[in-house]
Amino acid sequence: MVSETRMHVSCPTLLSIDMSGNVDVLDITNVASIAEVSSSRKLKFDLRLCNDYQGLRIVLQMIIGAKSLKLCSWFALGYFLWQLTNLPSPSFSCKSLHLQLDFVKWHLPGILNLLRHCPCLENLIVKLTSYAESTFQNILSSMVDAPVQCLTHHLKTVEVIGLVMEKQVIQFLEYLLGHSMVLKKMKILEKKEIYGPNGPKYDMAHEYEERLMNAPKASASAELNPSDVFP
Image (cartoon, rainbow, N blue to C red):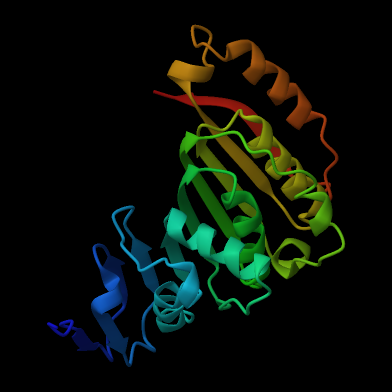
């Protein structure tokens, strides 16, 4: 049997890192100075259930001190599974979180669990590159009694981009509006070719826009303008 080749990197002065490929073979140590972490959609992990997604957990433990995180779909999936199996999830001190997701049913509870573990978060960006409807019921209602510290004390801006005007995305945004006590601005950039005047989902998007505009807000100063589009 050929043993797996591993890469060991010690980076005492590293400020940023962009991860891609098979990171299961990467050991990063001494990265206390790291400030920004970005992960590619091409990131690869050993995601067998039998190991509790240990490879993903190891990577996260390396970057818990970063102030800015850009994470792909794998991380939302991991946080969903750790919540589902009552396993501890790594916590971060980041103030900015950017999620790029191919949205499927597992991601919504994973995002909510991730927010629980980012207690200092001030800025949230979510880019949705695809969307698949979920059959999950009462996901958001189950969070009502579970305090999310960043929503209560810190989250000030939310930006959502792409395939936004979809049922469960709207439910998620309504949840944020209803629980973010210090929110200043929620900015929504819809996919023009889908939700614009000539798009196949224009009528539905208009209905969801009205729904968001009338949604209860925990912050009296929250500014919401869901009518922006991009090509």
